[in-house]
Each structure stands twice: as structure tokens, then as C-alpha cells.
Image 1 (cartoon, helix red, strand yellow):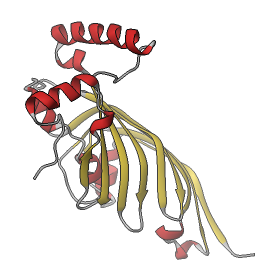
Image 2: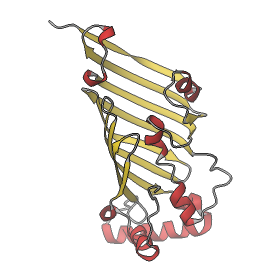
Image 3: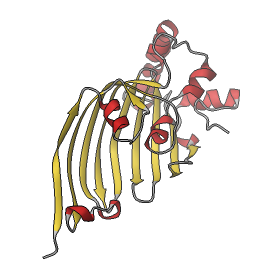
Length: 229
């Protein structure tokens, strides 16, 4: 029987961003508490660890933090979701809550790893301006990402009076058209993020946009989230 190393446990930290910085992973996450559960394995002895043979699963739960600037590596993957482009385009005022980067309430997700490729179906960033969900894969060994991102702006939070009226109206129409209250039917946007994580490509998937977002794009000529040129 071939030797195999198994590594499982949990990690809780009230200063997770500081921990990531001290470990040299990234300094793009700050002011956050986190709990991680993991069960990992790779063939061979512990010192024969290799990302390309890593298998297992990881559950992550981050609370009340911020994602800072766009930097290479892990921070870049998350940093591209900072939504600064469509916030600026819509001229919404988040000065009281929108500091440097993206302020979030929670980040949760489950990852299955097979031969160094992490798959996720329920990665959710619940941030101040929007809910952002990701589905796809990250190849840890080759540093490649292929994710589908759904962005659902919290318009009623962003524009308290007009947004509440529009939300109620759109929900009413959505129920009439679809027979149910379909979250994101009018406002949601979808994007594909792929490529090497030092230089990812952001591709708007217009066929999956909400009705009002499609109308906005048609009138103005630019999406709510744009890739920096």
C-alpha cells in the first residue's frame, strides 16, 4: 500500500487578515474574523506535499472585514470584485461605508479539491453594496482560475428611497412574469473570470443579465462592472 498523508482540523482567528499577512500569503484582507475547517490528503510522506496531488475539502467562513487593493495572487482574484467601476458609474454615495476596497459582512464557501484543483459551487460574498456568488474552479498548481460570477446589487441599501420603490415594483413585475420572486431577475449581472490569476480576464455574460441591467447597458453603452484597460 502506498503511503498517504492526511491532515485535518480547524482554524479560528479574530485577526485572520493579520495571520495571512504574517504567513506571507496576502495583505489584501483586513479587519476580519475567520473559521476554517479542512480535511486534506496527498500521496507520500508529509514532506512530499505537492499542490498537484492535493485532495480533500475546505469550508471557509469570514466575518466583517474588507478586501483591499488588487494585487497579484489570491488578493487579485478577490480584488477584481471590488465593484468600484459600477459604483462610480451609477454615482452612488457609499462614503460612509465604502472605504478602501470592498467591505463585506460575510464570505462563505465550500471547496472540493482533486489533484490541486479546487471546485466551488456556493462561494458567497455578502458585501455592503452587493451580493456576489462564484461558481467554478481554481487550479492551485497552475494558478489558473475559471469562475462564473453573479453580482446582485443591493439597490435598496444604496438608494434608500428610490431603491425601495424600484425593488418593490420589480419584485411585483417579476412575480407576474415568472410566477415567483426571482432574486436578481431585474438587477443581476453575470461575468466569467478566467485565466492566470496574475492576469485574469473578465467577460460580461450579457445573456444572463437582469432586464433592467440590459436596459441600462443598451442606453448607456457600458456595463455596471468593467475590466480596467
